[in-house]
Length: 211
Length: 84
Image (cartoon, rainbow over all chains, first blue to last red; front, side, top):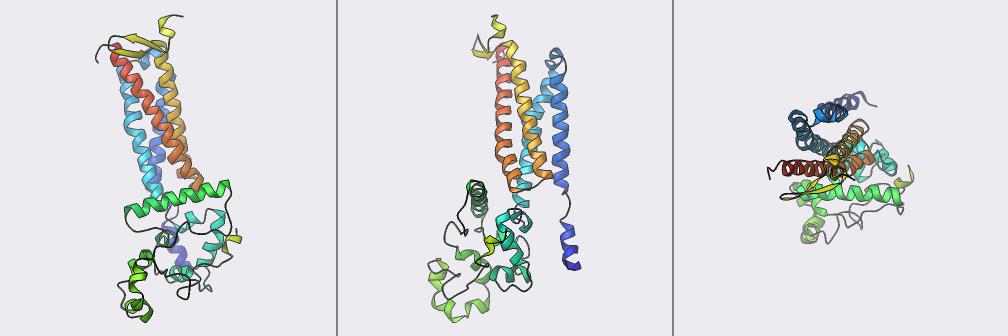
């Protein structure tokens, strides 16, 4: 790996601070629950034990869950996370291949998208877009363990707004004759940016085989 | 069987958990909470789609059940003492 890339990747390596906070708080809660429940039932019925359990059940545990949830939502956007499923290996290998000229690879190689490249191109914008992308991800995992059809394909037509969010304000995009002629169809996703005679080959066709 | 050993007993104001069952319910809640926390720790240490889904869905469900059980215990305790 290139030393520059190594230095960038090193920043995100290791367990983040929030990860350590979740682990430490969880261990404290587990230890307290065991301690309270293992002691003499008469002592458990003392107000202090009850209040402590109340604090653990209603405050600390839900707080740990929410911390883990928000941390997980953020961390599951990374390319490395997508690559943790075997079916994605071919796609991620291709985007990291300096000789690849596929659309996704160019976006990754030139850092046209700075971070979380898979997630950025496969989620709609806005809060509902994030939630929808996560639900689709759960569907993918379910499909993976219950048997999926190959080659894998998108569940629905690609939303052009994802491309337009970055490209639409760019003069070179606006001045391209094909874009000007089909502006309304492109914006409504009636005409897809991908496929036909436009921007073909986003990923290698056989990428799913490389597991 | 004494009334203390019955899962539910009637008091003024409604039903409560039998005295003997209160501790059992708290222990079940505690064990479920511990399992949920262990799933969360696992997903932090070994962050993969499966551990993440397990911690968020199964962990969340276990924690939810634990909270409901403790709410039942608290309400029963308050009813037995005649607070509510």
